[in-house]
Length: 337
Image (cartoon, rainbow, N blue to C red; front, side, top):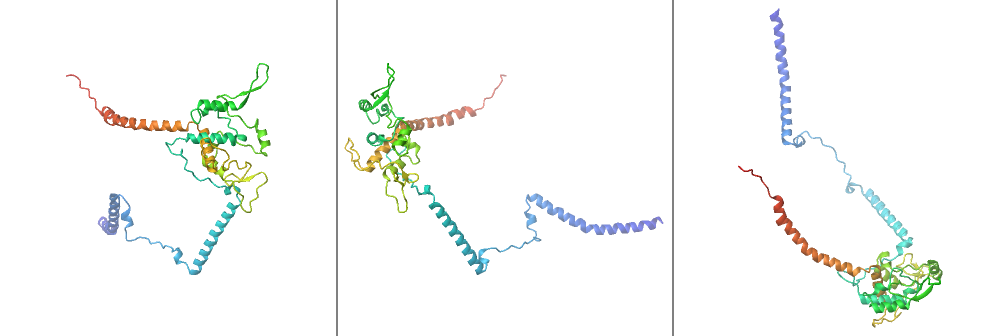
C-alpha cells in the first residue's frame, strides 16, 4: 500500500514539472527584457516592440474640407476681421484725445550726450520771454542771479533786475514800498494771484514756465510744435469763441492766442526774428530754465568717463595680476625638526 501511494505522487510531480517549464521560460524571458531596459537607462526598448498600439489620427486640416465649407469659413473670417477693423476705426474717430498730434523730434544742438546749450540762443530766448511771454506767464523759480555767467554778465543782470519794481517791506512805519530789483530777486509775476490770472484770461490759468519743458511730454519738441502749430480748424470741427485751434494741444482748443509770428521782436545780435527762430530760442531758454545744471552735468559725466578709462584698467591689472596671486597662494607651516 505504501508503494501504491508513491506512484501517483511521482506522476503528479512530473506533470507539474512539465507544466511549469513553459511558464518558467516565459518568466526568464521577461526578466531578460526587463534587465535590458534597466541597463539601457530608458524605455526605448519597450517602445520599439513589434506589438505597438496604433491610434487613428483625425485629419482636421483646412485642405481636407469640402469646397462649400472652405468658402463659408473664408467668408466668416473676412467679415469678422472687417467688422473688428471698422469698430476700431469708429472707436478711434470719436475719441477726441486721439486727434492730438504727437510732436516730431527736432535736431536740437544740445541733444547729444556731450553737447552743451547754445548760450547765444539762451540769451535771445530770454529776450523773447521778457517781451512776449512774461505778459501772461510767470517764472517764479528763476532769479536774476541765475542769468549771470550763462546768458548775461553780472552788470547786465543787475541792469535787468533794476528795471523791475519789487514790492518790499514793511518799512519803519509799517507800510509796504516798492524798490528796484536786485540780483537776488526772482522774476516778477504778471498777476498777483491765480484768481486774477484766470479773470484776465477768460478763465484759463497760464502755467508757470520755470519747469514747463520737464513737465510736458515731449519737452522742447512739444513746446516748439505748440508755438508754431496754430492753424485753421479742419472742416467739421467747431472751436468755441475765445479759443484757438492747435492740433498739438490736448483737446485741440487752447485759450492762448498765437504768441509769436515773424518779426515779433528784434534781436540785439541781428538774428532774423522768424517764427521758427523765435520758437527755437525760447525753447532753448526754457530748457535751460528747467535744468540749469545741464552743461555742468554733461561736463561731470565726461570727466567721470575719462577717469574711469584710467582707473578701471588699473584695477583690473591689480586684481588679475597682483591680488589673485596673493589670494590663491598656499601657506604651509613646517615645524622645526
